[in-house]
Length: 508
Image 1 (cartoon, rainbow, N blue to C red):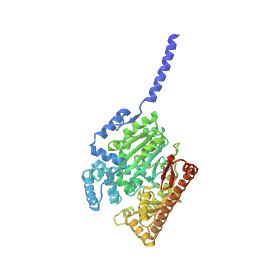
Image 2 (image 1 turned 60 degrees about the vertical axis):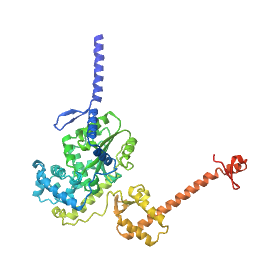
Image 3 (image 1 turned 180 degrees about the vertical axis):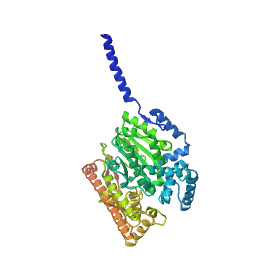
């Protein structure tokens, strides 16, 4: 009987121990060779730190400054430098890129694709590799391979459209698990965010890969400021996202990153403090390789704590599309989908299905009339003070306040000179359209002058209100002690400060 009890208790202990081991056991993911490997978080963190510390001090400083948005490693460009770089780029494509990496390039050349030969397309890769022609040529070839494999020959002839995604991919896209945010960081970089469960197991890896390629290759990469200064990847993942990340193949993720037509200058992931978050951190450190790992920061804590840390990297958090409970907000995302459809229709109308002519150097493309995401130096005109703290608005207000200090009267000649100076500085004044959630630029001098006059009057009005409110508050605080002051005036001289027959109460 005792033996049975001992065996029973031993079986219970064995079951508990197995359960504990299953909870604390590290995750398994495929390696480059396809074999499972045990993820040791402490070991990965040591490798991560070693890769960073092994770099020269000046390199570490430049990378850290770029990560925080203090400075950029972007190369200063000139027409002569670009022309020379493009020649070296073509030489590298012909001679330095292995033949095994050029099957899609040869396919595009056989179709006489002007898209992959265009200056705008090739400049993306030169900027992504800081104008290193050999690295840029290899990235260029890998990008064409990835596009040709995932989408087909048409992706070698033209830019990707929203209509190129199938119904399942559009469903994933509309869920808002992946979004490009409607604002930039402090230095003008665009931000792409992965939110929530990242789709869990409801969507395939191919679906995520094609939607990710559309967002990164077709939207982020078309922004020239982001091409130069880089982009920011932001992950706001919950516990359910662990399953999604574990389904990703490391080799496919590497191919996606190596084919990227832009460089990422910051990878931020926010996780809560749980066991599954530790597993997620180990997974992410395994996926991200090379220099990208040095630019990676994984923040573990509450949403408020993570937001506070993100702001130290120049990332505004007040407009991140998720609630305090973690619910995904998709208002802007849906509006952006409508804009992308209109933009695609505009391009299709310009091309008239002749993309060889559309991407040729002689064809003049009519620009789309709306702006989705303004630059940080632009002045935004929005209702209810929505853009009051926008960096461009702060700079323009400071400039106009100086002009108000120089001259109080806003006559026609003075306003005309200020307007000319704003136009010379190429400060864009953008008016927000609530119906379409986009911006339109004010281009005529007469209209710009009206906006400048309104801004200056608003600045003067706010100053007057602020002065009156401070005066009223001072009067209220003085009235409260008026009776006490009268009593103190009647006290002996030792309790007063007397000067020229003026009696003032002592400060208390």
